[in-house]
Image (cartoon, rainbow, N blue to C red; front, top):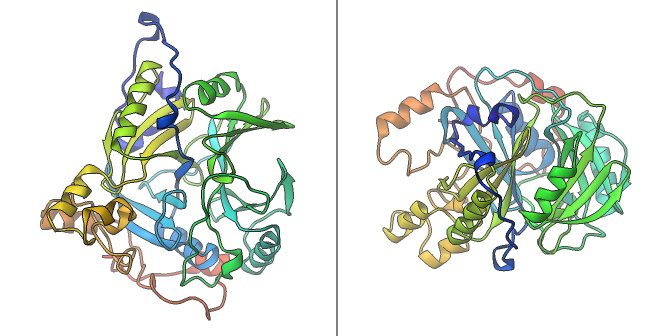
Length: 407
């Protein structure tokens, strides 16, 4: 029953299901030409778009690459935080669903998100930074031969920083945001392993290996490391088996889904057919303008997305028609999908509504903007290098005017 899975209903995604008793699952070998390329993005739920914006730009040092709406729920912001260039593999995104309550951590969930930093010594830098900013955090520790530092935000969302010093993998680091006051050599350069907490792990182990092409790399206590492609921090999942924890409930402070990289719409179609052949609940082809996607329920409470590195078809059509912010079709294929409808120098300063959903409908755009909660991103391009570090107290006490400053 889908009720046992992640709450995709709050996104209004339609999932296709198959009566497993009526068909035999055909195991098919994964074509290496279409193998997943690592983590594309992670999406979580926040109690406050404003606090999340302040936390990520002023403490973690990531840029707001796109300020838009949830494409399945226009009353909800969708914020994308990335490196300087908006590269896949660096995207941490958030929904702020109106009226949603606090979530709880436990089994049947994506339990923790990782960010990559270049070297072990960077973790000491961040430990001091978190101390100064009063960010809840642990001590530097080691797992699977990699140093890490756990921390939380104002919602209790669980994160960790992981060092790339001993990393071996295919994914190159991102480019640090040039307006951040985080020292460049210690900056966050991408997403690291996501943690999935389950009581029973045999089925997820089998699905990761047989359907998605992950390989089991190591086991340490109750943690099992799976890697895809050439592996490394940017292409890993850690399964955390916990038979004692309570069941998680989705709400703010929890993760909604994790997305994995595929090259383009053609390779995405391969994955749609592959998932369909295994009779897993899935969405089919979903257009997101900045990329194309498919959503797949892989376990109770655990939602995967497969997302393209290239912009979606409508975005490329926009390029062909000369209405995009890039100069050529060829440039669009190697440019972040975020820079198709607005330039890198514009992104994040004001609300950007996906053109394929709002084709010239100015009145509808205005109504959508007016319904959103107040959010001030007017400092999106302020150079923070010489500014003092923000604290959690400052974020919690931040007040904005009655007007929605992001509009």
